[in-house]
Amino acid sequence: MTRCDPSVWGWRRHLHSACRLAVGGLCCMFAAWAAAQDEGPTWFAGGRPREAAHQALGFLLAAEADGLAPTDYDAEGLARQLAGAEALDAAGLRAVDAALTRAMRRYLADLHGGRIDQLPSQAGQQVERDEGFDPAGLLRAALAAGRLAEAVHGAAPAQPDYPGLRRALGVYRELAEDPLRGGLWGAPLPPLPGRKLEPGQAWAGVGDLARRLVALGDLPARARLPGRYEGEVVAGLRAFQARHGLAADGVIGRATLAQLEVSPAHRVRQIELGLERLRWTPRLRAPRSIVVNVPEFMLRAYTVEGRRATLVLQMRVIVGKALDTRTPLFAEDMRFIEFSPYWNVPPSIAQAELVPKLQRSPGYFARQGFEFVDGDGRALTTLTAENLEAVLRGRLRIRQRPGPKNALGDIKFVFPNDENIYLHHTPSPGLFARPRRDFSHGCIRVESPVALAGFVLAGVPEWDEIRIREAMTRGTSSTLRLREPLRVVLAYNTVGVAPDGRVMFYPDIYGHDAALDEALRRARP
Image (cartoon, rainbow, N blue to C red; front, side, top):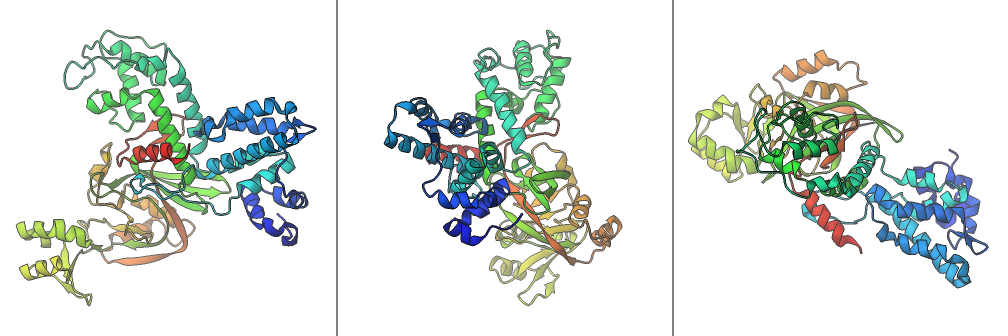
Protein backbone atom coordinates (compact mmCIF):
# COMPACT_ATOMS: atom_id res chain seq x y z
CA MET A 1 0.00 0.00 0.00
CA THR A 2 1.33 3.47 -0.84
CA ARG A 3 2.07 5.59 2.21
CA CYS A 4 -0.16 8.64 2.62
CA ASP A 5 1.41 12.08 2.33
CA PRO A 6 1.65 13.47 5.91
CA SER A 7 0.95 16.97 4.61
CA VAL A 8 -2.47 15.80 3.46
CA TRP A 9 -3.35 14.36 6.83
CA GLY A 10 -1.96 17.03 9.18
CA TRP A 11 -3.64 16.40 12.51
CA ARG A 12 -5.10 13.15 11.15
CA ARG A 13 -1.87 11.14 11.32
CA HIS A 14 -3.42 8.69 13.77
CA LEU A 15 -6.32 8.12 11.41
CA HIS A 16 -3.94 6.76 8.80
CA SER A 17 -2.52 4.23 11.27
CA ALA A 18 -5.94 3.06 12.44
CA CYS A 19 -7.38 2.70 8.97
CA ARG A 20 -4.36 0.81 7.73
CA LEU A 21 -4.82 -1.71 10.54
CA ALA A 22 -8.55 -2.18 10.12
CA VAL A 23 -9.66 -1.60 6.56
CA GLY A 24 -6.59 -1.56 4.39
CA GLY A 25 -6.38 1.26 1.88
CA LEU A 26 -9.38 3.37 2.87
CA CYS A 27 -7.28 6.12 4.45
CA CYS A 28 -5.05 6.87 1.48
CA MET A 29 -7.97 6.57 -0.92
CA PHE A 30 -9.89 9.26 0.91
CA ALA A 31 -7.22 11.44 2.51
CA ALA A 32 -8.32 14.57 0.68
CA TRP A 33 -11.96 13.99 1.65
CA ALA A 34 -11.10 13.47 5.31
CA ALA A 35 -9.02 16.64 5.44
CA ALA A 36 -12.05 18.65 4.36
CA GLN A 37 -14.54 17.09 6.78
CA ASP A 38 -13.69 18.77 10.09
CA GLU A 39 -17.26 18.49 11.33
CA GLY A 40 -17.24 14.67 11.19
CA PRO A 41 -19.57 12.24 9.41
CA THR A 42 -22.82 13.48 7.92
CA TRP A 43 -25.65 10.93 8.10
CA PHE A 44 -28.31 13.06 6.37
CA ALA A 45 -28.95 14.44 2.92
CA GLY A 46 -31.85 16.77 2.13
CA GLY A 47 -33.23 16.30 5.62
CA ARG A 48 -33.48 12.52 5.20
CA PRO A 49 -31.24 9.80 6.65
CA ARG A 50 -28.73 8.41 4.19
CA GLU A 51 -28.56 4.66 3.61
CA ALA A 52 -25.43 4.61 5.77
CA ALA A 53 -27.47 5.93 8.72
CA HIS A 54 -29.88 3.02 8.48
CA GLN A 55 -26.96 0.62 8.11
CA ALA A 56 -25.26 2.06 11.20
CA LEU A 57 -28.49 1.82 13.18
CA GLY A 58 -28.76 -1.82 12.16
CA PHE A 59 -25.34 -2.54 13.63
CA LEU A 60 -26.26 -0.81 16.89
CA LEU A 61 -29.59 -2.62 17.21
CA ALA A 62 -27.84 -5.96 16.58
CA ALA A 63 -24.92 -5.28 18.96
CA GLU A 64 -25.99 -8.14 21.21
CA ALA A 65 -24.91 -10.55 18.46
CA ASP A 66 -21.34 -9.70 19.56
CA GLY A 67 -22.14 -9.82 23.24
CA LEU A 68 -22.54 -6.03 23.47
CA ALA A 69 -25.58 -4.13 24.74
CA PRO A 70 -27.66 -2.00 22.32
CA THR A 71 -28.71 0.12 25.31
CA ASP A 72 -25.10 1.30 25.69
CA TYR A 73 -25.54 3.11 22.38
CA ASP A 74 -29.19 4.20 22.86
CA ALA A 75 -30.00 2.21 19.73
CA GLU A 76 -33.79 2.36 20.21
CA GLY A 77 -33.68 6.09 20.93
CA LEU A 78 -31.68 6.67 17.74
CA ALA A 79 -34.17 4.55 15.81
CA ARG A 80 -37.00 6.82 16.94
CA GLN A 81 -35.03 9.93 16.07
CA LEU A 82 -34.17 8.69 12.60
CA ALA A 83 -37.79 7.72 12.00
CA GLY A 84 -38.87 11.28 12.84
CA ALA A 85 -35.97 13.04 11.15
CA GLU A 86 -38.13 14.71 8.47
CA ALA A 87 -39.85 16.77 11.17
CA LEU A 88 -36.57 18.11 12.60
CA ASP A 89 -35.06 21.51 11.87
CA ALA A 90 -31.39 21.99 11.02
CA ALA A 91 -30.33 22.11 14.66
CA GLY A 92 -32.25 18.95 15.41
CA LEU A 93 -30.64 17.13 12.47
CA ARG A 94 -27.19 18.19 13.66
CA ALA A 95 -27.97 16.85 17.13
CA VAL A 96 -29.10 13.48 15.78
CA ASP A 97 -26.12 13.36 13.44
CA ALA A 98 -23.75 13.96 16.35
CA ALA A 99 -25.53 11.38 18.54
CA LEU A 100 -25.31 8.69 15.87
CA THR A 101 -21.64 9.49 15.31
CA ARG A 102 -20.88 9.20 19.04
CA ALA A 103 -22.78 5.93 19.25
CA MET A 104 -20.91 4.41 16.30
CA ARG A 105 -17.54 5.54 17.62
CA ARG A 106 -18.28 3.94 20.97
CA TYR A 107 -19.61 0.80 19.31
CA LEU A 108 -16.45 0.40 17.20
CA ALA A 109 -14.24 1.02 20.23
CA ASP A 110 -16.17 -1.51 22.34
CA LEU A 111 -16.22 -4.09 19.54
CA HIS A 112 -12.49 -3.80 19.01
CA GLY A 113 -11.09 -3.35 22.49
CA GLY A 114 -13.77 -4.12 25.07
CA ARG A 115 -16.01 -2.12 27.35
CA ILE A 116 -13.85 -1.52 30.40
CA ASP A 117 -10.55 0.32 30.70
CA GLN A 118 -9.27 -1.24 33.90
CA LEU A 119 -10.10 -4.56 35.48
CA PRO A 120 -10.14 -5.17 39.21
CA SER A 121 -7.10 -7.21 40.21
CA GLN A 122 -9.20 -10.28 40.99
CA ALA A 123 -10.42 -10.37 37.38
CA GLY A 124 -7.01 -11.82 36.64
CA GLN A 125 -5.87 -10.25 33.40
CA GLN A 126 -4.62 -6.94 32.13
CA VAL A 127 -6.56 -5.18 29.39
CA GLU A 128 -4.44 -4.87 26.24
CA ARG A 129 -5.08 -1.63 24.37
CA ASP A 130 -4.46 -1.27 20.65
CA GLU A 131 -3.03 2.24 20.71
CA GLY A 132 -3.14 2.49 16.92
CA PHE A 133 -6.90 1.97 16.72
CA ASP A 134 -8.83 5.21 16.08
CA PRO A 135 -12.60 4.60 15.89
CA ALA A 136 -13.36 8.17 14.83
CA GLY A 137 -10.91 8.05 11.96
CA LEU A 138 -12.02 4.57 10.96
CA LEU A 139 -15.64 5.71 10.84
CA ARG A 140 -14.88 8.75 8.67
CA ALA A 141 -12.87 6.74 6.17
CA ALA A 142 -15.44 3.94 6.02
CA LEU A 143 -18.29 6.34 5.30
CA ALA A 144 -16.28 8.03 2.58
CA ALA A 145 -15.64 4.69 0.91
CA GLY A 146 -19.18 3.42 1.38
CA ARG A 147 -17.70 0.43 3.23
CA LEU A 148 -19.16 0.69 6.71
CA ALA A 149 -19.86 -3.04 6.97
CA GLU A 150 -16.29 -3.83 6.01
CA ALA A 151 -15.00 -1.44 8.67
CA VAL A 152 -17.16 -3.04 11.35
CA HIS A 153 -15.91 -6.48 10.35
CA GLY A 154 -12.32 -5.23 10.46
CA ALA A 155 -12.82 -3.78 13.95
CA ALA A 156 -13.95 -7.12 15.41
CA PRO A 157 -11.26 -9.15 17.23
CA ALA A 158 -9.00 -11.21 15.00
CA GLN A 159 -8.79 -14.02 17.57
CA PRO A 160 -9.25 -17.51 16.06
CA ASP A 161 -12.15 -18.35 18.41
CA TYR A 162 -14.14 -15.18 17.83
CA PRO A 163 -16.33 -16.15 14.83
CA GLY A 164 -17.26 -19.52 16.30
CA LEU A 165 -18.02 -18.04 19.70
CA ARG A 166 -20.19 -15.37 18.10
CA ARG A 167 -22.21 -18.09 16.34
CA ALA A 168 -22.48 -20.03 19.61
CA LEU A 169 -23.92 -16.96 21.31
CA GLY A 170 -26.74 -16.86 18.76
CA VAL A 171 -27.49 -20.55 19.22
CA TYR A 172 -27.65 -20.36 23.02
CA ARG A 173 -29.59 -17.10 23.02
CA GLU A 174 -32.19 -18.69 20.75
CA LEU A 175 -32.34 -21.70 23.08
CA ALA A 176 -32.68 -19.51 26.18
CA GLU A 177 -35.52 -17.50 24.62
CA ASP A 178 -37.46 -20.56 23.43
CA PRO A 179 -40.24 -21.10 26.00
CA LEU A 180 -40.38 -24.84 25.28
CA ARG A 181 -36.71 -25.76 25.09
CA GLY A 182 -35.39 -23.08 27.44
CA GLY A 183 -38.22 -23.87 29.83
CA LEU A 184 -36.74 -27.32 30.42
CA TRP A 185 -34.50 -25.68 33.04
CA GLY A 186 -37.46 -24.17 34.91
CA ALA A 187 -37.31 -26.84 37.59
CA PRO A 188 -34.34 -28.93 38.81
CA LEU A 189 -33.88 -32.54 37.79
CA PRO A 190 -35.25 -35.13 40.24
CA PRO A 191 -32.85 -36.22 43.00
CA LEU A 192 -30.46 -39.04 42.14
CA PRO A 193 -31.21 -42.40 43.74
CA GLY A 194 -27.84 -42.29 45.51
CA ARG A 195 -24.59 -40.35 45.52
CA LYS A 196 -24.23 -41.01 41.80
CA LEU A 197 -26.14 -42.56 38.92
CA GLU A 198 -24.45 -45.22 36.81
CA PRO A 199 -25.57 -46.69 33.47
CA GLY A 200 -28.27 -49.33 33.88
CA GLN A 201 -29.86 -47.83 36.98
CA ALA A 202 -33.45 -46.64 37.25
CA TRP A 203 -34.07 -42.91 37.74
CA ALA A 204 -37.18 -40.77 37.56
CA GLY A 205 -35.23 -38.03 35.78
CA VAL A 206 -34.27 -40.00 32.66
CA GLY A 207 -36.92 -38.32 30.52
CA ASP A 208 -36.10 -34.80 31.73
CA LEU A 209 -32.39 -35.47 31.21
CA ALA A 210 -32.96 -36.73 27.68
CA ARG A 211 -35.03 -33.68 26.75
CA ARG A 212 -32.30 -31.35 27.99
CA LEU A 213 -29.64 -33.28 26.07
CA VAL A 214 -31.73 -33.05 22.90
CA ALA A 215 -32.16 -29.29 23.37
CA LEU A 216 -28.39 -28.91 23.79
CA GLY A 217 -27.60 -31.03 20.74
CA ASP A 218 -25.87 -33.83 22.66
CA LEU A 219 -28.63 -36.35 21.94
CA PRO A 220 -30.44 -36.85 18.60
CA ALA A 221 -34.11 -35.88 18.70
CA ARG A 222 -35.01 -39.32 17.31
CA ALA A 223 -33.31 -41.13 20.22
CA ARG A 224 -35.39 -43.76 21.99
CA LEU A 225 -36.08 -42.93 25.63
CA PRO A 226 -35.60 -46.02 27.81
CA GLY A 227 -37.18 -46.54 31.19
CA ARG A 228 -33.78 -46.76 32.81
CA TYR A 229 -30.61 -44.73 32.43
CA GLU A 230 -29.01 -46.62 29.55
CA GLY A 231 -28.43 -46.75 25.79
CA GLU A 232 -28.41 -43.55 23.75
CA VAL A 233 -29.10 -41.37 26.77
CA VAL A 234 -25.82 -42.49 28.34
CA ALA A 235 -24.03 -41.76 25.06
CA GLY A 236 -25.61 -38.30 25.02
CA LEU A 237 -24.53 -37.69 28.59
CA ARG A 238 -20.95 -38.65 27.71
CA ALA A 239 -21.03 -36.13 24.86
CA PHE A 240 -22.29 -33.50 27.30
CA GLN A 241 -19.53 -34.33 29.77
CA ALA A 242 -16.87 -34.05 27.07
CA ARG A 243 -18.12 -30.54 26.26
CA HIS A 244 -18.05 -29.39 29.87
CA GLY A 245 -14.57 -30.33 31.06
CA LEU A 246 -15.76 -33.48 32.83
CA ALA A 247 -14.61 -37.07 32.71
CA ALA A 248 -16.74 -38.58 29.93
CA ASP A 249 -17.59 -41.74 31.87
CA GLY A 250 -21.38 -41.59 31.64
CA VAL A 251 -21.70 -41.47 35.42
CA ILE A 252 -23.83 -38.65 36.85
CA GLY A 253 -22.20 -37.43 40.03
CA ARG A 254 -22.23 -34.10 41.81
CA ALA A 255 -20.06 -32.26 39.26
CA THR A 256 -21.99 -33.52 36.23
CA LEU A 257 -25.35 -32.80 37.86
CA ALA A 258 -24.24 -29.25 38.63
CA GLN A 259 -23.35 -28.66 34.96
CA LEU A 260 -26.68 -30.15 33.83
CA GLU A 261 -28.49 -27.60 35.97
CA VAL A 262 -26.77 -24.58 34.37
CA SER A 263 -29.45 -22.85 32.29
CA PRO A 264 -29.02 -21.68 28.69
CA ALA A 265 -29.48 -18.10 29.92
CA HIS A 266 -26.43 -18.51 32.16
CA ARG A 267 -24.48 -19.95 29.22
CA VAL A 268 -25.43 -16.89 27.17
CA ARG A 269 -23.78 -14.69 29.78
CA GLN A 270 -20.76 -16.99 29.92
CA ILE A 271 -20.31 -16.68 26.15
CA GLU A 272 -20.71 -12.90 26.35
CA LEU A 273 -17.91 -12.82 28.91
CA GLY A 274 -15.82 -15.01 26.61
CA LEU A 275 -16.29 -12.61 23.71
CA GLU A 276 -15.35 -9.70 25.95
CA ARG A 277 -12.15 -11.45 27.04
CA LEU A 278 -11.19 -12.04 23.41
CA ARG A 279 -11.37 -8.27 22.81
CA TRP A 280 -8.49 -7.63 25.21
CA THR A 281 -6.62 -10.91 25.11
CA PRO A 282 -3.25 -10.13 23.47
CA ARG A 283 -3.65 -10.54 19.74
CA LEU A 284 -1.77 -13.04 17.62
CA ARG A 285 0.48 -10.66 15.69
CA ALA A 286 3.67 -12.70 15.44
CA PRO A 287 4.14 -15.23 12.60
CA ARG A 288 4.02 -18.01 15.21
CA SER A 289 2.33 -17.92 18.58
CA ILE A 290 1.60 -20.21 21.52
CA VAL A 291 -1.64 -19.75 23.48
CA VAL A 292 -2.41 -21.42 26.80
CA ASN A 293 -6.07 -21.29 27.86
CA VAL A 294 -5.76 -21.80 31.60
CA PRO A 295 -9.26 -23.05 32.58
CA GLU A 296 -9.30 -25.41 29.60
CA PHE A 297 -5.88 -26.82 30.59
CA MET A 298 -4.85 -26.72 26.92
CA LEU A 299 -1.98 -25.28 24.88
CA ARG A 300 -2.31 -24.48 21.19
CA ALA A 301 0.37 -23.40 18.74
CA TYR A 302 -0.53 -21.30 15.69
CA THR A 303 1.03 -19.95 12.57
CA VAL A 304 -0.36 -16.52 11.74
CA GLU A 305 -0.66 -14.83 8.36
CA GLY A 306 -2.54 -11.56 8.24
CA ARG A 307 -5.77 -12.03 10.20
CA ARG A 308 -5.75 -15.79 9.72
CA ALA A 309 -4.37 -18.13 12.39
CA THR A 310 -3.80 -21.80 11.55
CA LEU A 311 -3.72 -24.36 14.36
CA VAL A 312 -0.56 -26.44 14.11
CA LEU A 313 -0.31 -28.20 17.48
CA GLN A 314 -2.31 -28.69 20.66
CA MET A 315 -1.69 -30.52 23.92
CA ARG A 316 -2.86 -30.81 27.50
CA VAL A 317 -1.20 -28.75 30.20
CA ILE A 318 -1.14 -28.50 34.00
CA VAL A 319 -1.58 -25.02 35.48
CA GLY A 320 -1.39 -23.32 38.88
CA LYS A 321 -3.55 -24.43 41.79
CA ALA A 322 -6.80 -22.52 42.13
CA LEU A 323 -6.49 -22.02 45.88
CA ASP A 324 -3.07 -20.46 46.29
CA THR A 325 -0.70 -20.59 43.28
CA ARG A 326 -2.73 -19.38 40.31
CA THR A 327 -1.06 -19.02 36.93
CA PRO A 328 -0.95 -15.31 36.02
CA LEU A 329 -2.22 -14.10 32.66
CA PHE A 330 0.00 -12.07 30.33
CA ALA A 331 1.86 -12.19 27.00
CA GLU A 332 5.63 -12.27 26.54
CA ASP A 333 8.17 -13.43 23.95
CA MET A 334 9.83 -16.82 24.31
CA ARG A 335 13.58 -16.29 23.92
CA PHE A 336 15.33 -19.42 25.25
CA ILE A 337 15.03 -23.15 25.59
CA GLU A 338 16.90 -24.87 28.42
CA PHE A 339 17.71 -28.54 27.89
CA SER A 340 18.29 -30.77 30.94
CA PRO A 341 17.61 -27.76 33.17
CA TYR A 342 18.37 -27.19 36.81
CA TRP A 343 15.34 -26.41 38.93
CA ASN A 344 16.14 -23.40 41.08
CA VAL A 345 13.61 -23.86 43.85
CA PRO A 346 11.82 -20.53 44.49
CA PRO A 347 12.54 -19.27 48.02
CA SER A 348 8.84 -19.33 48.92
CA ILE A 349 8.59 -23.04 48.03
CA ALA A 350 11.94 -23.87 49.63
CA GLN A 351 11.09 -22.20 52.92
CA ALA A 352 7.43 -23.19 53.21
CA GLU A 353 7.53 -26.71 51.76
CA LEU A 354 10.95 -28.17 50.97
CA VAL A 355 12.90 -27.33 54.14
CA PRO A 356 10.21 -28.80 56.45
CA LYS A 357 10.12 -31.92 54.28
CA LEU A 358 13.89 -32.29 54.40
CA GLN A 359 13.85 -31.86 58.17
CA ARG A 360 11.35 -34.74 58.40
CA SER A 361 12.95 -36.94 55.70
CA PRO A 362 16.66 -36.13 55.23
CA GLY A 363 17.12 -38.92 52.67
CA TYR A 364 14.84 -37.05 50.26
CA PHE A 365 17.66 -34.55 49.63
CA ALA A 366 20.01 -37.05 47.96
CA ARG A 367 17.31 -39.16 46.32
CA GLN A 368 15.90 -36.16 44.46
CA GLY A 369 19.26 -34.72 43.47
CA PHE A 370 19.10 -31.47 45.47
CA GLU A 371 22.03 -29.28 46.39
CA PHE A 372 22.61 -25.95 48.11
CA VAL A 373 24.07 -22.96 46.27
CA ASP A 374 25.78 -20.05 47.98
CA GLY A 375 26.02 -16.44 46.87
CA ASP A 376 29.12 -17.15 44.78
CA GLY A 377 27.38 -19.93 42.84
CA ARG A 378 29.24 -22.77 44.58
CA ALA A 379 27.28 -26.02 45.02
CA LEU A 380 27.13 -27.68 48.45
CA THR A 381 25.94 -31.27 48.36
CA THR A 382 25.84 -32.01 52.09
CA LEU A 383 22.57 -31.74 53.97
CA THR A 384 23.10 -30.12 57.37
CA ALA A 385 20.89 -28.32 59.84
CA GLU A 386 23.07 -25.23 59.38
CA ASN A 387 22.50 -25.24 55.61
CA LEU A 388 18.74 -25.60 56.06
CA GLU A 389 18.75 -22.69 58.51
CA ALA A 390 20.72 -20.64 55.95
CA VAL A 391 17.99 -21.33 53.37
CA LEU A 392 15.34 -20.10 55.80
CA ARG A 393 17.38 -16.92 56.36
CA GLY A 394 17.95 -16.38 52.63
CA ARG A 395 21.71 -16.95 52.70
CA LEU A 396 21.58 -20.17 50.64
CA ARG A 397 19.25 -21.41 47.98
CA ILE A 398 18.33 -24.93 46.86
CA ARG A 399 18.38 -26.28 43.35
CA GLN A 400 17.71 -29.68 41.81
CA ARG A 401 20.26 -31.14 39.41
CA PRO A 402 19.25 -32.33 35.90
CA GLY A 403 18.00 -35.88 35.83
CA PRO A 404 14.95 -38.12 35.62
CA LYS A 405 13.51 -36.80 38.92
CA ASN A 406 13.97 -33.11 38.14
CA ALA A 407 10.68 -31.24 38.70
CA LEU A 408 11.06 -29.46 35.34
CA GLY A 409 11.52 -32.70 33.46
CA ASP A 410 14.14 -32.43 30.76
CA ILE A 411 13.22 -29.18 29.01
CA LYS A 412 12.19 -25.65 29.93
CA PHE A 413 10.75 -23.00 27.60
CA VAL A 414 11.64 -19.51 28.84
CA PHE A 415 9.74 -16.29 28.10
CA PRO A 416 11.24 -13.80 30.61
CA ASN A 417 8.60 -12.21 32.84
CA ASP A 418 8.24 -10.61 36.26
CA GLU A 419 6.30 -13.62 37.59
CA ASN A 420 9.05 -16.17 36.76
CA ILE A 421 6.53 -18.32 34.88
CA TYR A 422 7.65 -20.73 32.16
CA LEU A 423 6.62 -23.87 30.28
CA HIS A 424 8.32 -27.15 31.15
CA HIS A 425 8.06 -30.93 31.07
CA THR A 426 7.40 -33.05 34.15
CA PRO A 427 8.55 -36.39 35.57
CA SER A 428 4.91 -37.08 36.62
CA PRO A 429 2.97 -37.38 33.34
CA GLY A 430 0.09 -39.31 34.92
CA LEU A 431 -1.63 -36.10 36.00
CA PHE A 432 -2.34 -35.20 32.36
CA ALA A 433 -5.05 -37.89 32.31
CA ARG A 434 -7.19 -36.01 34.82
CA PRO A 435 -10.00 -33.78 33.51
CA ARG A 436 -9.14 -30.95 35.92
CA ARG A 437 -5.43 -30.14 35.98
CA ASP A 438 -4.61 -27.28 38.34
CA PHE A 439 -1.76 -28.85 40.31
CA SER A 440 1.32 -26.66 39.80
CA HIS A 441 2.88 -23.77 41.71
CA GLY A 442 2.02 -21.44 38.82
CA CYS A 443 4.28 -22.59 35.99
CA ILE A 444 2.81 -24.63 33.15
CA ARG A 445 3.67 -28.28 32.55
CA VAL A 446 3.30 -29.46 28.95
CA GLU A 447 2.28 -32.94 27.87
CA SER A 448 4.31 -33.22 24.65
CA PRO A 449 7.57 -31.31 25.08
CA VAL A 450 9.32 -32.79 22.03
CA ALA A 451 6.48 -31.73 19.75
CA LEU A 452 6.44 -28.26 21.31
CA ALA A 453 10.21 -27.93 20.86
CA GLY A 454 9.77 -28.97 17.24
CA PHE A 455 7.26 -26.17 16.73
CA VAL A 456 9.45 -23.60 18.48
CA LEU A 457 12.49 -24.63 16.43
CA ALA A 458 10.69 -25.01 13.10
CA GLY A 459 12.81 -23.50 10.36
CA VAL A 460 16.05 -24.37 12.17
CA PRO A 461 17.02 -27.53 10.26
CA GLU A 462 19.94 -28.48 12.49
CA TRP A 463 17.50 -28.93 15.39
CA ASP A 464 15.56 -31.99 14.28
CA GLU A 465 13.74 -34.37 16.63
CA ILE A 466 16.81 -36.56 17.13
CA ARG A 467 18.94 -33.65 18.28
CA ILE A 468 16.14 -32.29 20.49
CA ARG A 469 15.77 -35.63 22.27
CA GLU A 470 19.53 -35.99 22.66
CA ALA A 471 19.80 -32.56 24.29
CA MET A 472 16.88 -33.34 26.60
CA THR A 473 18.43 -36.58 27.86
CA ARG A 474 22.08 -35.52 27.98
CA GLY A 475 21.97 -34.73 31.69
CA THR A 476 24.09 -31.61 31.23
CA SER A 477 22.25 -28.31 31.35
CA SER A 478 22.49 -26.13 28.22
CA THR A 479 20.65 -23.05 26.98
CA LEU A 480 19.64 -22.34 23.39
CA ARG A 481 18.81 -18.75 22.42
CA LEU A 482 16.08 -18.61 19.78
CA ARG A 483 16.93 -16.84 16.55
CA GLU A 484 13.47 -15.31 16.45
CA PRO A 485 11.37 -14.72 19.59
CA LEU A 486 8.05 -16.55 19.76
CA ARG A 487 4.94 -14.96 21.30
CA VAL A 488 3.41 -16.79 24.29
CA VAL A 489 -0.07 -15.76 25.46
CA LEU A 490 -1.43 -16.98 28.80
CA ALA A 491 -5.17 -16.44 28.49
CA TYR A 492 -8.34 -17.27 30.39
CA ASN A 493 -11.59 -18.19 28.71
CA THR A 494 -14.22 -20.57 30.07
CA VAL A 495 -15.88 -21.14 26.71
CA GLY A 496 -14.59 -22.15 23.29
CA VAL A 497 -15.61 -23.80 20.03
CA ALA A 498 -14.12 -27.10 18.86
CA PRO A 499 -13.11 -27.54 15.20
CA ASP A 500 -16.28 -29.59 14.63
CA GLY A 501 -18.44 -26.72 15.89
CA ARG A 502 -19.23 -28.08 19.36
CA VAL A 503 -19.47 -25.40 22.03
CA MET A 504 -17.15 -26.22 24.94
CA PHE A 505 -17.48 -24.94 28.51
CA TYR A 506 -14.79 -25.06 31.18
CA PRO A 507 -14.82 -24.45 34.95
CA ASP A 508 -14.16 -20.92 36.19
CA ILE A 509 -11.36 -22.31 38.35
CA TYR A 510 -10.00 -18.92 39.48
CA GLY A 511 -13.33 -17.07 39.70
CA HIS A 512 -12.24 -14.62 37.01
CA ASP A 513 -15.56 -14.78 35.14
CA ALA A 514 -17.48 -13.77 38.22
CA ALA A 515 -15.16 -10.80 38.75
CA LEU A 516 -15.43 -9.76 35.09
CA ASP A 517 -19.21 -10.03 35.16
CA GLU A 518 -19.35 -7.72 38.16
CA ALA A 519 -16.90 -5.27 36.58
CA LEU A 520 -18.96 -5.08 33.39
CA ARG A 521 -22.18 -4.48 35.30
CA ARG A 522 -20.56 -1.55 37.10
CA ALA A 523 -18.66 -0.20 34.11
CA ARG A 524 -21.06 2.16 32.36
CA PRO A 525 -24.80 2.76 32.37
